[in-house]
Image (cartoon, rainbow, N blue to C red; front, side, top):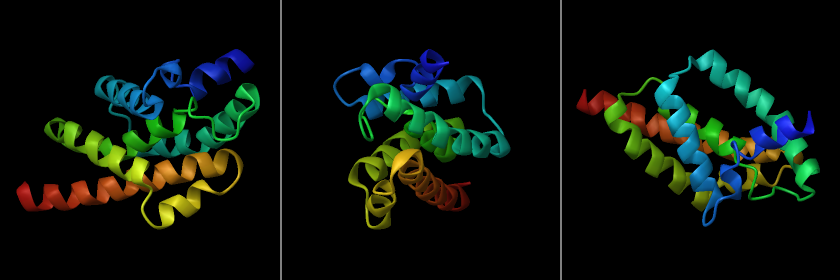
Length: 142
């Protein structure tokens, strides 16, 4: 079971890639979404499951908020990509990475919540903000 949790927490091993494991985790999340445009209910399910996966990843890797844990980036990009035209995927990727890396205002506060919840919440927030911006772009352009 620990091996499966480690595989999931590290984004199928992309969390071990250097440099920028979070970017690699986001990329694998985007690739997964290309093949399975999951409904919102599934993304919400993975958001809750991610708390357990990321908490377990911390214990397995023996490191608080280890950079190798990228399941949170995968969920964050799925939120960003949900129900948008494929032409906007690169923009969603870049925008999500900016919000995830810069951790503007309250996103940084969310990351400081201990355990798997804190690991997940900052990326969920970055994904939601990205998706709201994309909704505005879609409304204006389409």
